[in-house]
Image (cartoon, rainbow, N blue to C red; front, side):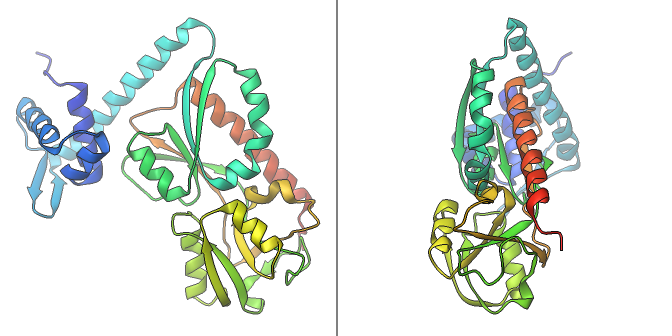
Length: 311
């Protein structure tokens, strides 16, 4: 006899498992906590197993819960694949894609690869949203976006993470920068810097802070800014510097107003990662978009390697 388990019950169960909390799971699934709890209890009744140990501090999956989670994710993934494959029978590439992109990608890569992409695929409806890594990951877990492109993603049970490559982080300054443009720098060898930091929501922020704590970066003054474009424009007109992924400034390589230096020590990386939910595989339209982005990342990395000073 086939168990009477609904897709909603699988979704609610996975949300509780991944969030470790009924209240956070209800918020993520945009439903009331009593309704979510009731569906999970119905699921436990069908399976005749307790899936979670409940306490005042949260919920912890039982052995049965951990085993069932693997099956639930596989079932949900299969349903998404089936829907995608049947939709593709129409014969032309179409569909909706909602992508979350960090500001560095929006500024440095999107203007180059997006125009030919939308021309090649007129039936793909794009919704592109910009945000720092932390914000995008929250949107992804809430299924408000299909996938995100971020730096330094956290490990999370629900997430599938794929490296897209990228390049080293770079120090960016105006014409008053402490080192000639293109020369690799060891930050600990530089005098104390006036440093513009991205906010904690930026994936690179934690790496920069670790380098400050370990004295690999000496700081005279610091400020934080929630805008990549604002950071670049500010350092261009001042004696401050900032640190960003290479892709953020790939369009500025030939600029006379910026000094751009690869950082060789400490080894700060500006690698990009594609992140999506394990239970929601990328559809055909999303895959085409990611493939186009990957080609642009590869092109930008090759271009940077050809112009940066290897010495």
